[in-house]
Image (cartoon, rainbow, N blue to C red; front, side, top):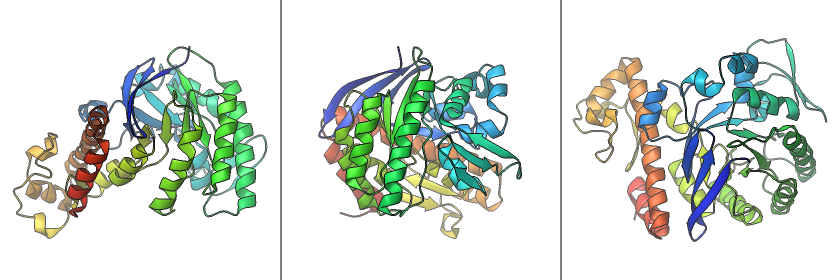
Length: 370
């Protein structure tokens, strides 16, 4: 048996559920902390867990480059290797191959590329190899290898992309080893063409996956286009499987996507922001390098229970101006804490049938607008 998903309740199109994996359950809607190279930057795994994070994301491309799937497997898998004992999802590496490599060659069999680490050495990643590496990592949720387009793209190119995604998805599914508490997700593509999104969703559901991701969004298109594509795509996905919007995003992006039926999210935004002196709060974002925080005794967010919010903005401003590592650690943990508080509030609002009201109140506070 693969991993299981229980849809507990709905409020409009917003969904409240539980995903059951071999390394524990996680509640949806869920935000996954990004731990690209088997680490959530600047934090220990205990600090990550303290934020309320239930599931983290690793990346096949980076982990195959170093330390290598074989070594991680030898060390007992990604959970034991990293010290994170909860659920782990691993991205297939397709996006990184396209975005980081100085040279890629797409073929029917897979993609040939040069690593951003070792320069001239050629590598070849196939759908089967990506799944095999994720098996070595002992990932609870494996993602199929897909072809990532740079948008905007002409329709003819997107049509070919959708066809390739389906073929590779089928090969990925066939290579996946079914076992209790583990699953594999397909990735819907189609850019901003509604009929191609529908076609991709239908073809992937015919293959049959444990969950479905909406890919190829949050790559520079306007927010209204992203929301429109999500709203058009989710009705074609099975209601009894989790839905994952890849690489999203801001708090407002997450709320809009939950409203349109998305269950899972990941983004580097909260952790990257923490390393650049940015803090998310219920009243918008703060730049702790700004001089106005030099003598500010207030906490970052008076409704947050994280370690950073037991200190003053003045102290954290001091740390960031001195480039102290502690500043990045505190802000990173705070930002993840904020995101997990948001997701917990979202889940409660759906359970209570008041998601629309909660969303309106949150946006009013966050943007300071009526």
